[in-house]
Figure (cartoon, rainbow, N blue to C red):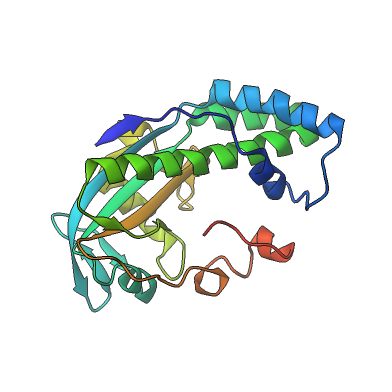
Length: 227
């Protein structure tokens, strides 16, 4: 299943957090720049997502996705999907136009580039939230876990290529992966959501379970991401 997503106003407080602005009130100049950049991001964004609901089965190395050759390896994802009979594989992007917008800004005005990059990060998060709402509506009768991104915990980011192939994401939404396992367009997300007929227990979700904890820019500034 694939679909387009409509984005409304972007969360400016989240954008300021991505910028590392802290709790201080932004001045009028920064607010004006954010407003300008928000318009540009919304004009350039073409948010789309694709997802697939699959039966799953535990294996010694992780979780096998039935009907595919994909195995989600690691203890973190097996624990995350504990009690779930199905999993949603999802991929979301806000399009290559955003990457071009960031590159142009980096050549002309680095301050503007930082603001655009931060707003674009907010845009893809909001697109993911909207995708989750659509998935919930289209799969009634299930309780959902939070979305578990590739690279989170010990779920290796090296699975990106196989994951995208299962979703046919290159063809469906123009989402690809580089030789270094980076998503292109860069403002994109791949994630797994567990589905269960019974309420799911709260799973560990925080810095100590994340594979990026040693290099995370938010931890370095004393904060945390939305993971």
